[in-house]
Length: 575
Image (cartoon, rainbow, N blue to C red):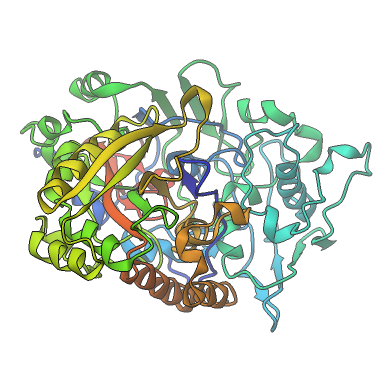
């Protein structure tokens, strides 16, 4: 999980395995749709322009930050979706829109893992015939090494920490670079009994391990080709495409990997001959990118007030998907700040807020969607109907707020502080809207800032701390567990961590091996913490995704919250 505030909330852990295999069949395409477009958000829940036409150049543009093309060093869903073009993993997500896309299926592995009765041992068997871009075989030890390199912060700064507490709960392993030659520091919790078998030994059950094996951490890395921090400049391909050359500037070009075979890959069609991605920034560059037909897809991921004009532009609106990004904005009540030890005082704030005015402050419905609870859309366990405080009614509820104030002994209201991170203008706008909404019922709030150059924490008297976060992968657990219990340090735990009901449910969810049972338990966690009003849901950030008429097999993938790039093709691209 990626959170914008580093003190109260930490990065996360996990999801679960899925036992259902869904094979998406792409139907032959005909003449491309040359009408204005199939409609707003048309690719959000279905596949547009199904086709098996191959060849040509797929042209992409994005403002999405690319932290690294090293599969182990990104927290960006956009980059994770790009990884599927060149980096295969033990498991991956089904190629389908909607909730079907959240089902895990084998990629490098022959099948979903065999799990021991106690839930502590996961065994994967690899497919035969797997090869890197140079023709060398992909071996189980390469996957083990690809995971081990994450543990060395000096050799691989910025690598994901998701597996640390699972595979090395004592925190003693510091990566493979201690050794030399064929002997190196070995992570004992991963065993490689054969070239085609990899076994994970856990100290306690962890239901989300299979979902972590669908992330870049499980992409194979040949040790002799590992260049450490520079590996992302031109990572070794295990998928249908490879980097044409070392990455430079704001463009990358992927070309076909001739050693990849569709016969050992049931996920990818690899339709285009080349994939070109250009990075830009801002609304004006986006408009230029789509105006002259230079790109087949373009995306904006940093919400702006001006997006409303874009999604209502008659020349573009039917070619745009304006969907939630997965980032949730919320406030966390500080149990150390009076009067928020009292449940009714917390509920008074929820009823006093005006979700519609907050949404307007964040740029309107094109930049933010209202939410009534914490679970982000596009996660297994998401709970859209749950709205205990009627927040999706979009209006303040002053009578209910006043009832709660009387119940907490604050009939005349109270004073408090709202803390926002320095350099987060969207949080500041949300805070201003909250201050205005609470004032009529007597809740008088001021805004303070934390972070910035001095790195200050929110003050002890901060009543509501605004933050934002997104799941690290498509699991309710990857968001709720670190939010509530802390990611890697008890000091990061949220106020709900002291609730024995919540802690018991989190432990129960982690013990599951069925992803749907686990998701149902996390749904109960979400409802419990909302019933106790420890958090103030504010909004989901949104993205803008443009698709040209040339694009085939286009759909928004729930796990990546962007187009599923590996599925895309283009009309008039080739045979």
